[in-house]
Length: 235
Picture 1 (cartoon, rainbow, N blue to C red):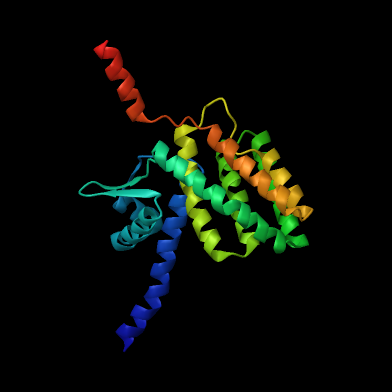
Picture 2 (cartoon, rainbow, N blue to C red; picture 1 turned 135 degrees about the vertical axis):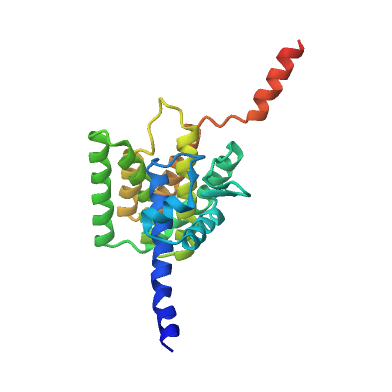
């Protein structure tokens, strides 16, 4: 009986540790502290979080299911390296759901939520002014998550969390170095439309914002380079 009791009491702790590992790895990816292709050693992660290899493996498998981590046979787990095709699919998916998310958010708008969005915009501006690139990148993704939380739609929120993490990897790999990250001005415009309960404008601004982010990416297919090289050498 005592053994059974201990097993039951350990279960919540195990679940909490798995969640902490998942959240920690995801946060590091969002802040660009873990780069695409980084090896995620089970033993090292276990030491950092005080977790067994079994729990670390469970967390990594969950992240792999979300497309944030790749698990390779006999090699282990690595931070994913999205392809240009992956990038296009991620932004296509975001364009499909985020205008609807902001529509739901306007239905649920409240003074408390508007205050929270306003404080978030101020925090993002402060990060930009002090040149804190990691915080700026993280806060950019958090803005979209906040709007999804505001919407009260748990399914969309789950989808968007995954898409935001993938977007962070995509931006790290493919953003042109002379272009800014997700802009505070864009976010401020969306918040202003939410404040006015203007669904059409909020949705249009969100679409325009996502289109601009994707347009700033240098999504070049490696196969195209190979074709041009073959043509050149064959001339």
